[in-house]
Image 1 (cartoon, rainbow, N blue to C red):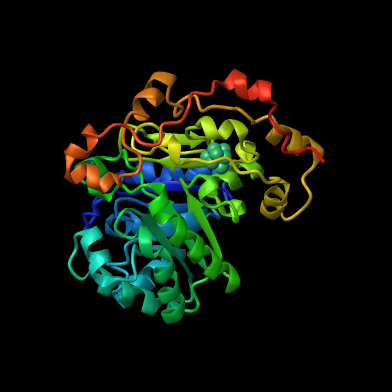
Image 2: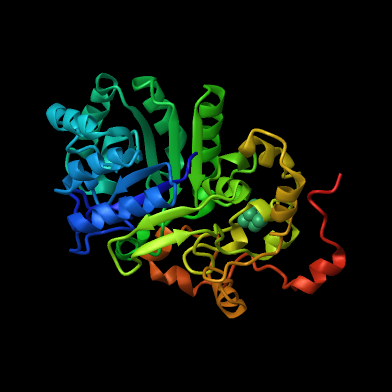
Length: 386
Ligand code: SF4
């Protein structure tokens, strides 16, 4: 994918998604800020902008932003819950102003699950009405699904249903939920374990791959998608050495993201995919490194699949040099990791949230402590060796 910048137009939203990582802040972009952020993306030679929020279609700046982006030669996309786009006239006006693509957030094929997650009555039905309008608008549409404890077991059912009802949808994106956002802290029952989605995610990927569709997954460690490493958003950024710009409407402000790395655990030390894997998001906080397991497979086919060509030796060398690298901001320290190991592993975090008595159980599945020096002494296999 081309380099695209993210611009939050507003944090307002009709819905109240239980895992929302960008809930209302009361801050809106001004017209001047909007124009200057788009100008900055054009100066950075980005190919396009993804308007996001909150719900960007609620922003009074929406049409001006679409028109300004078009004037700068930036392609415009929008991440939307589809509520306003279910109105044909409104949808058409967006397209006329330059909207060329939408990412629609649909979290389940099951109406009651989607409405429960979004906390908005008829959210599912309205979103389906929006999707039905897409072909006549002549634009393209992807599906974005946030993985949480409530949809983790039927991701495959959701993609099968979407492809049956809207066969022209060709691309799907899963984001494993950000468990550290405000809303997730209020609704910890949404935070699943990785094992809860592993099977249905693989089945969903198998189905889409067999049907010739494309897909991406973000915040999913490669050991939870070992047959499709090239579909990891972070891996693609790592291999293609791409960047990402996001303008948040909170204290984070403008973020120019050049590093795609989360937490690395003990298993990563022995893993052939370490150089191309971002690791585990929120490791030793909400998620548990004992769920990780090393992959023993050559990462070169994944690199080729991302690039669609043979990598140059210099690029391969730079990727190889990433082995053992830790994030300066996201890597938990050893004390934090040690504390996390004392928590029960085999219990879904939703059960922990509902019944804190689980936390009194002794730790399950404790790993013997193997220091990094021991692993080095054993001899780390060179994933790029012939
Ligand atoms: S590097 Fe770590 S997180 Fe990534 S696939 Fe290997 S074990 Fe899993």
